[in-house]
Amino acid sequence: MTSNLATARPTLVLASASPRRLELLRQVGLDPDRVIPTDIDERPLKSETPRQLALRLAHAKAEAVAACEPGAYVIGADTVVALGRRVFGKPEDEAAARRMLGRLSGRAHRVLTGVAVRAPDGRTASRLSETRLRWKRLSAADIESLVGSGEWRGVAGGYRIQGRAAGLTLELQGSYSGVVGLPLYETLALLEGLDVLILDALRHRPHASHFHLERAIEVAKQVGAKRTYFTHMAHEIEHEETNATLPEGMELAFDGLRLMLS
Image 1 (cartoon, rainbow, N blue to C red):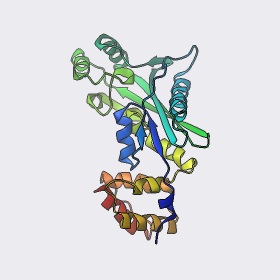
Image 2: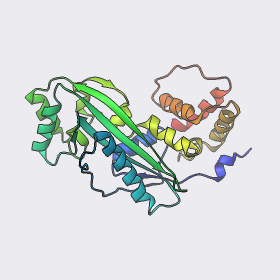
Image 3: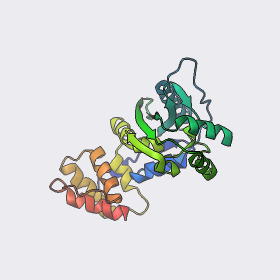
């Protein structure tokens, strides 16, 4: 049996220069056809809140790339670090990074990532991920370690949660992937809402077994599995973080995913 999903694979484009966002998409089985960086002014507008800024820039990135990729689903995202209403952008140099890190020391701050998806028919949908973090009080040695690592370059707030800052974080409430740069739950929900067949994207992985994935898709459809749940479970299986009991009939589907992810 040949799945109808095989005949209409959507084109997916990531409007970002961030390798971290690309890695996050690949974690959940989505490998964009193209990655196109954007060059837009990321400075906040007068009286613009951090939330408004993150969403506006995500929309701007998606729209800019959609103009030259009219037949694609385009994902745009932007991450903002905020202390109250104060926005911490990407530090220009080591001195700026030290100042930012010093201000965040021992204080709760927010990481807001806006994500927008532009569909080929012109529809655009967006969501905002907001995560609260609290660091320990940083010593001078902590700050120098962060700055010396070079991880401050090209990232909002001057740190990477997946790097040395992880060892300084006392509390994280919200989306870890949103802090890294792309909230995966929100992104998949947006794609699903715009009718992108996420399973179809999964089955086009380069090392996928056509037979097993075809069967996995068919079984998933037969038992009525939701695509976001299916994809989320695939991510958990990849990282061996779940012992969840699968619905009847889903074992074969996940055997296909395990094979694909191996």
